Image (tube, rainbow, N blue to C red; front, top):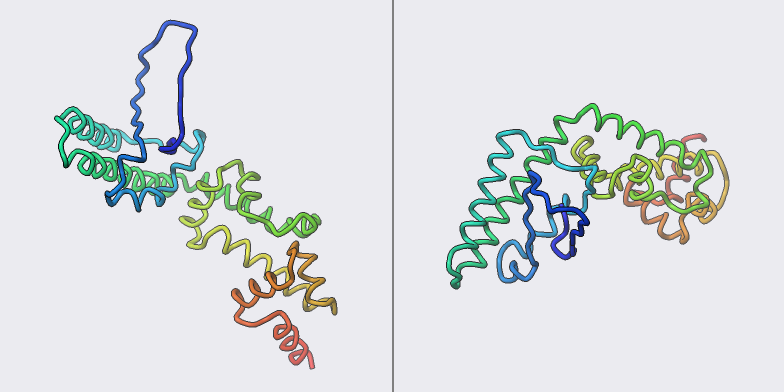
Length: 228
């Protein structure tokens, strides 16, 4: 998948070949004033890399070709006031099919996905243990690179497999580690925040309250009362 705004070119020093390749390139101006203009940003697979390609079954390939044929037929039809909207609607159907096929691929590649999640969980647990807190708060990009996936594909995979976003899982791990620090030390909240990689303590406090429903100070008080 290549974003509509990208420019591609092909240079060859040899004779031009005719490989079994079918492509669809479209200009974003085509979508202005159509429902696809608002929806195009929802197709996250545009951000995937070549190594995260979609593998089509024979039936899926047939549907894919049929969609391309409809687009081709409309393009070859004399242009009128309906052309842009009809072409855009056919492209939207094609993209919706691709979204369905990618969801199927996430399901059928469970073993591969499980390995990715295992690496992600391991890296999450080791991030602070290995002293990476000084490098800042862990990001989705950081873990996507560890498992050799793009941010988009990694995020979609985690969401499909766990029901939570990668950022939600990262936040949960940060708060888990924060609770350990708040319980085991008397360090000021700001010190705990800096140790976790937060540049500003208030950002840590906001995340903590969003996840737990209480502030770090309230959590520490509850723990203190419980111990007494």
